[in-house]
Length: 334
Ligand code: PEP
Ligand code: MN
Image (cartoon, rainbow, N blue to C red; front, side):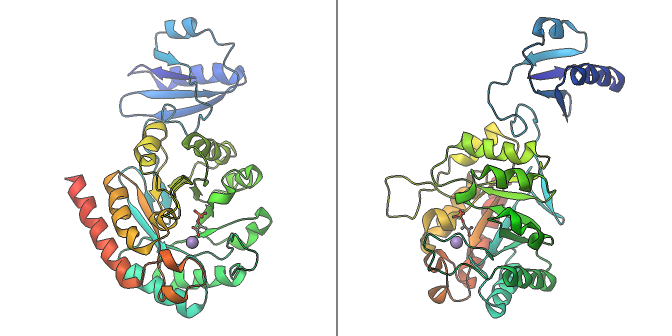
């Protein structure tokens, strides 16, 4: 349920109303807008007499929220959430490109890619250290050594690092990681979501291969309900009847998620297409659709990549994509 307060409500009046709600055992979320303050209530609101609440002099309106996601809901929090990763802001008009290899493979590889994407204007560096592979015989990642290489690359470039966590028992290894990525395959690993929700680190939550937007938002809700509101949603393509592309990029997810939620939305044109030559047009389309960021796979030698070479851009190709994306950003912000 949300209660919108009238303009001019004093902090004391607001606090005594919130106290009344808390005494009813409800969790109170306050969202301060330009003109109005919205009080979001979580818990069993069935006891509340809506008519009585509406009759209070400080109440503008009262609405029951029917969606099961509350904290992630735009109705609870009208303003866009801005996630700040070491000063790099995502959301609310702030845009970032996250770029780097699918997997960290060696110091040479990561250093070359990190320096190059940084020069091209990427704001964050990605790289998998723990890789969720379909086959157990494929390269599984460099694990802690991979994280150490990411931290070295961060020292060199200043780029905050984004890497996937698959098992919460590994959390200590991620102490210095800036953004924890929850991969598509783990979008509904609810125990993992609850645990990353107990950290204060920004979470990049990827949409599952066969999950609806509402399910994605319920997964975000798990993280937020555990105390971490720094969630970035990621559309990375879904399974459809189409087999030409690796997945089908659901670009309507960008405006739809923006309508449903205040959380930032980034798009992954690499995993959604699986084909490097489709990355640039889909990155451009995602930006035009209002994405708050992109996550793009880049490799210094895609032909010999240990993971996802077919969708990886060369450093030169990434440079061209970054330039194009910036031009589109300028054009749409005019
Ligand atoms: C990745 O980003 O490296 C990855 C494995 O992506 P996804 O979980 O979207 O498949
Ligand atoms: Mn990959």
